[in-house]
Amino acid sequence: MAAISPVVESVAAVLVDNGYYSEAAVARVEGQLSTRGAPVVYAATGRRKHGRSIEELEAHPEPPPPSPGSSAVEIMAHRLTAREGKALYGQRKQTVEPVFGIIKEAMKFRRFMLRGLYKTKLEWSLVTLSYNVKRLFHMQAALELA
Image 1 (cartoon, rainbow, N blue to C red):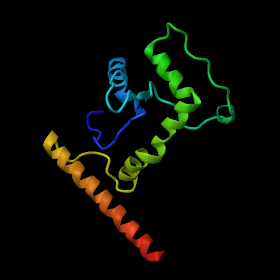
Image 2 (tube, rainbow, N blue to C red; image 1 turned 45 degrees about the horizontal axis):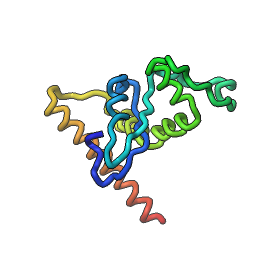
Image 3 (cartoon, helix red, strand yellow; image 1 turned 30 degrees about the vertical axis):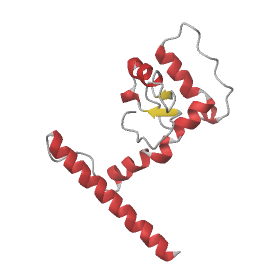
Image 4 (cartoon, helix red, strand yellow; image 1 turned 90 degrees about the vertical axis):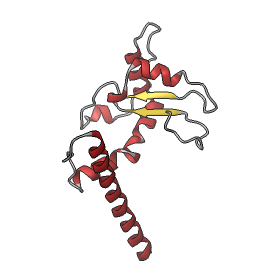
Protein backbone atom coordinates (compact mmCIF):
# COMPACT_ATOMS: atom_id res chain seq x y z
CA MET A 1 0.00 0.00 0.00
CA ALA A 2 2.88 2.36 0.72
CA ALA A 3 4.12 1.98 -2.88
CA ILE A 4 0.88 3.27 -4.43
CA SER A 5 1.36 6.59 -6.18
CA PRO A 6 -0.06 9.66 -4.43
CA VAL A 7 -1.87 10.43 -7.70
CA VAL A 8 -4.26 7.55 -6.93
CA GLU A 9 -6.98 9.14 -4.84
CA SER A 10 -8.75 6.05 -3.54
CA VAL A 11 -8.23 2.31 -3.32
CA ALA A 12 -11.44 0.36 -2.81
CA ALA A 13 -10.07 -3.19 -2.97
CA VAL A 14 -6.73 -4.94 -2.61
CA LEU A 15 -6.32 -8.29 -4.41
CA VAL A 16 -3.48 -10.52 -3.20
CA ASP A 17 -2.27 -14.10 -3.52
CA ASN A 18 -2.16 -16.68 -0.79
CA GLY A 19 1.50 -15.92 -0.11
CA TYR A 20 0.66 -12.40 1.03
CA TYR A 21 -2.18 -13.37 3.35
CA SER A 22 -1.88 -13.01 7.09
CA GLU A 23 -4.45 -11.87 9.59
CA ALA A 24 -2.16 -9.12 10.86
CA ALA A 25 -1.45 -7.78 7.34
CA VAL A 26 -5.16 -7.70 6.45
CA ALA A 27 -6.00 -5.90 9.71
CA ARG A 28 -3.21 -3.37 9.08
CA VAL A 29 -4.33 -2.61 5.50
CA GLU A 30 -8.05 -2.47 6.30
CA GLY A 31 -7.38 -0.32 9.35
CA GLN A 32 -5.63 2.37 7.33
CA LEU A 33 -7.82 5.42 7.12
CA SER A 34 -6.30 8.16 5.06
CA THR A 35 -7.33 10.40 2.22
CA ARG A 36 -7.66 7.19 0.21
CA GLY A 37 -10.20 5.56 2.53
CA ALA A 38 -9.99 2.07 3.98
CA PRO A 39 -9.71 -0.61 1.29
CA VAL A 40 -11.19 -4.11 1.53
CA VAL A 41 -8.67 -6.93 1.14
CA TYR A 42 -9.48 -9.96 -0.99
CA ALA A 43 -6.78 -12.55 -0.37
CA ALA A 44 -6.67 -16.16 -1.44
CA THR A 45 -6.34 -18.34 1.64
CA GLY A 46 -5.52 -21.54 -0.21
CA ARG A 47 -5.07 -23.04 -3.65
CA ARG A 48 -7.95 -23.81 -6.01
CA LYS A 49 -7.68 -26.78 -8.29
CA HIS A 50 -7.63 -26.22 -12.03
CA GLY A 51 -10.52 -27.43 -14.12
CA ARG A 52 -14.03 -27.22 -12.80
CA SER A 53 -16.94 -29.60 -12.92
CA ILE A 54 -20.33 -28.76 -14.41
CA GLU A 55 -21.76 -28.26 -10.91
CA GLU A 56 -19.06 -25.72 -10.13
CA LEU A 57 -19.73 -23.84 -13.38
CA GLU A 58 -23.46 -23.57 -12.75
CA ALA A 59 -24.80 -20.50 -11.00
CA HIS A 60 -25.02 -20.86 -7.25
CA PRO A 61 -26.80 -18.67 -4.73
CA GLU A 62 -24.76 -16.36 -2.52
CA PRO A 63 -23.08 -18.30 0.27
CA PRO A 64 -24.39 -17.58 3.76
CA PRO A 65 -22.38 -14.99 5.69
CA PRO A 66 -19.88 -16.33 8.20
CA SER A 67 -21.03 -16.66 11.78
CA PRO A 68 -20.02 -13.92 14.28
CA GLY A 69 -17.33 -16.14 15.84
CA SER A 70 -15.71 -17.08 12.53
CA SER A 71 -11.95 -16.96 12.13
CA ALA A 72 -10.24 -14.46 9.84
CA VAL A 73 -9.51 -17.24 7.32
CA GLU A 74 -13.21 -18.19 7.15
CA ILE A 75 -14.21 -14.54 6.68
CA MET A 76 -11.66 -14.13 3.87
CA ALA A 77 -12.81 -17.37 2.21
CA HIS A 78 -16.38 -16.04 2.30
CA ARG A 79 -15.30 -12.77 0.68
CA LEU A 80 -13.81 -14.68 -2.23
CA THR A 81 -16.84 -16.95 -2.72
CA ALA A 82 -19.33 -14.06 -2.76
CA ARG A 83 -20.22 -12.64 -6.18
CA GLU A 84 -18.39 -9.35 -5.63
CA GLY A 85 -15.24 -11.11 -4.45
CA LYS A 86 -15.26 -13.53 -7.38
CA ALA A 87 -15.65 -10.67 -9.84
CA LEU A 88 -12.88 -8.59 -8.28
CA TYR A 89 -10.44 -11.46 -7.82
CA GLY A 90 -11.13 -12.60 -11.38
CA GLN A 91 -9.66 -9.33 -12.64
CA ARG A 92 -6.21 -10.61 -11.69
CA LYS A 93 -6.44 -13.01 -14.64
CA GLN A 94 -6.70 -10.03 -16.96
CA THR A 95 -4.01 -7.81 -15.47
CA VAL A 96 -1.06 -9.42 -13.70
CA GLU A 97 -1.09 -13.14 -14.34
CA PRO A 98 -0.73 -13.11 -18.18
CA VAL A 99 2.53 -11.16 -17.92
CA PHE A 100 4.12 -13.82 -15.72
CA GLY A 101 2.81 -16.53 -18.02
CA ILE A 102 4.35 -14.86 -21.07
CA ILE A 103 7.67 -14.35 -19.30
CA LYS A 104 7.75 -17.99 -18.20
CA GLU A 105 6.43 -19.68 -21.35
CA ALA A 106 7.14 -17.48 -24.35
CA MET A 107 10.40 -16.00 -23.07
CA LYS A 108 11.45 -19.24 -21.30
CA PHE A 109 12.53 -17.39 -18.14
CA ARG A 110 11.98 -19.84 -15.31
CA ARG A 111 14.88 -19.22 -12.94
CA PHE A 112 17.52 -16.68 -12.16
CA MET A 113 21.02 -17.42 -13.38
CA LEU A 114 22.69 -15.03 -10.94
CA ARG A 115 22.73 -15.02 -7.16
CA GLY A 116 22.41 -12.21 -4.65
CA LEU A 117 19.75 -9.56 -4.30
CA TYR A 118 21.53 -6.93 -6.40
CA LYS A 119 22.23 -9.33 -9.27
CA THR A 120 18.73 -10.85 -9.30
CA LYS A 121 17.17 -7.37 -9.31
CA LEU A 122 19.39 -6.51 -12.27
CA GLU A 123 18.47 -9.73 -14.07
CA TRP A 124 14.75 -9.16 -13.42
CA SER A 125 15.07 -5.59 -14.73
CA LEU A 126 16.54 -6.95 -17.97
CA VAL A 127 13.74 -9.53 -18.30
CA THR A 128 11.00 -6.95 -17.77
CA LEU A 129 12.75 -4.48 -20.08
CA SER A 130 12.88 -7.09 -22.84
CA TYR A 131 9.21 -7.95 -22.26
CA ASN A 132 8.24 -4.27 -22.57
CA VAL A 133 10.38 -3.70 -25.68
CA LYS A 134 8.84 -6.80 -27.30
CA ARG A 135 5.36 -5.56 -26.42
CA LEU A 136 6.07 -2.07 -27.82
CA PHE A 137 7.37 -3.63 -31.03
CA HIS A 138 4.18 -5.65 -31.49
CA MET A 139 1.99 -2.67 -30.63
CA GLN A 140 3.81 -0.53 -33.23
CA ALA A 141 3.42 -3.28 -35.85
CA ALA A 142 -0.32 -3.46 -35.11
CA LEU A 143 -0.63 0.33 -35.49
CA GLU A 144 1.14 0.23 -38.85
CA LEU A 145 -1.26 -2.43 -40.11
CA ALA A 146 -4.31 -0.43 -39.01
